[in-house]
Length: 261
Image (cartoon, rainbow, N blue to C red; front, top):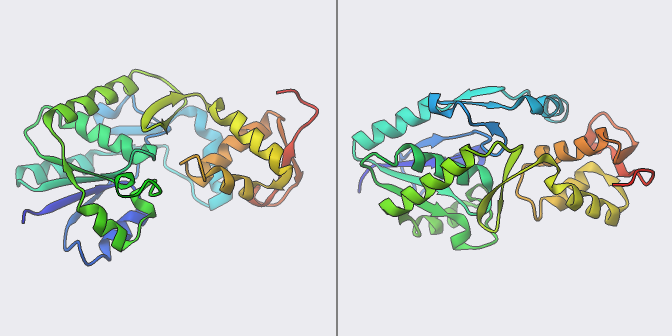
């Protein structure tokens, strides 16, 4: 059996794979890059950065999870590791899904980068095992082992198709990117406003964290990013804080009925 390079995008999946018994000594390459929101204009130089519009998000992350994200990240190490693996005829296996944007865009980027190189790329889509598995990162060891049996070798035509999708995304300067109906969609910050406000209207007056939890049932974004979208509506006065706590997650919020949306 050839040596395998597992390409992933989240810490939770990394730790689950590392401790698993069905994967032995595989090299893991992790793209912990927020492809959904970062500026991709300099990615040909292996650099991605948070857009200037996300200064509020950085501030929010410091307050909510005591972590200040880096404004700029390099993906050169990851690419070098994959290139080295290709030289050694290793098997490149990408763990992703049709539902979660960051890992799917990781797949698109890799197909774009290696579209003109002679290499074999394999992919595993978590939702092909079970539609409820919106990401490999939400699966346990047994589920991941079952998913590994569904790996699919990408044809040259498929790689070129993913490459074309990547190029279309690069040429669209949008606030954020989401997955909708198994496809990438470039949208504005306000795209989920109606969804957020309709649910908050139903819940009436709740802690932010409860609203976020309900939203995550249908929107596959991180909790901190959904909090950020709510935070933007608070700054606009559309949502008001009725009971302020140290963290926005614990604060109680409701719709401002004095403002027409």
